[in-house]
Image 1 (tube, rainbow, N blue to C red):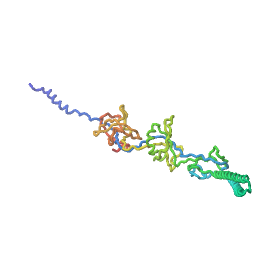
Image 2 (image 1 turned 120 degrees about the vertical axis):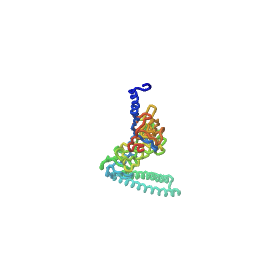
Image 3 (image 1 turned 180 degrees about the horizontal axis):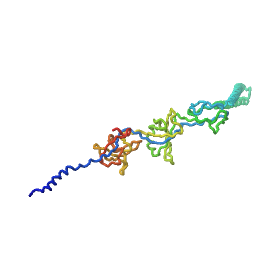
Length: 372
């Protein structure tokens, strides 16, 4: 027994290696499921969003320039009318008679003037031979001059009567769409009355008025000469936006609202834009070429600033501080911190820590960076 272990102890010691071989290995780290997207480089427009109101390019309240009975209406309510088209007719007979009377007086005085001028010629020859006195000659010349002035006045009266007769046919001053008829046929209308006959709105082209924060004024001033695009979307209309151009910038900021009034001009050939309706407006000042963009939900705000989780080649997620220039819809424009082609986490950031290993899920179809 000397130099040997007792048999029970030896048996126990011999069993120890077997116990070590039967222990389980440590469990592998848990993979955190995340959704990712690829950092992209593409052109992104610089836009300012606002709410706008459609208003006609011109509005004219048609009134009569002469008084009389409204004898005819030559359009239907809601019609498109052309500039110069006869809309109303006032009984022209009083003005036809006034024009005829004025022309008769003009012809009478013109005849008297011709006789007076002949007298001047005869008296001039007689005065040279001293057959008439200078006083008589001057009197004849004075009569002719007086009749000449009278004839000028008669011509003015004829022109005024002609205009009154012309004004008896009331024409459209602009091309546009008429509204409700405010005075019906058979009514007596007065020159310069307070009641308009009808209102015409010019809707081809048409304007959209909108307001932007005054803080946007410097960038608007910088790009105003480049004819910025004004893009509007009509509620419950076709999904395609309508493009126009910036046509007006107000000369002062509203001190109450702190906003600046702008207007966009639209050709509106099919009449989609209608005066008085509200539309969604985007003022596109320029297009930023080769912008670095990521889905907006991938950017997280922290104590040190904005950051994203970037997926490394070994499927580990690491934080990266980024500088966000602006957000356009569902994408964020990154000024600094990322390069095109990198993979960022868009969903699952709350479960991540620096260096955590992840299991990548496919991004939803149509999302920025999906399918990479």
